[in-house]
Length: 169
Image (cartoon, rainbow, N blue to C red; front, side):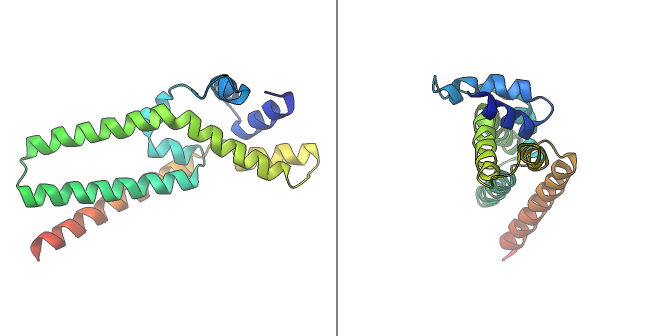
């Protein structure tokens, strides 16, 4: 990884840049594609995506959760699945989602970071302005994570209402 690329990625990531740069070293140097496991993405999944300002990934995640929850609830309603089985199935699905986010989170974040770095670099800005734009477009956002939590809750409530209305008809 070149020094300019490393600086750009560090500017983009902000605090904890050394963690990500270490994880991304192999994929960036062409010595493999494994960017390691991300425990924050495992435990926080969709919230972590929003926290790291990966908007598209956050919306895709919420969409997948909405569809999965809707299908799951429709199956439960049509098959009279008991509450204990529902809890077990829900835990398994949550674990699978968490594992996928943990396993691929660093890779998704690298892809996002490279896209933003390339976009900013293509503007031909002076170095100090490039660093400022990368810092602004990257980094972290607690507010976006909280917003994702609200959206996630709204998606679940809307899904449960839709399932309830469909089961009544």
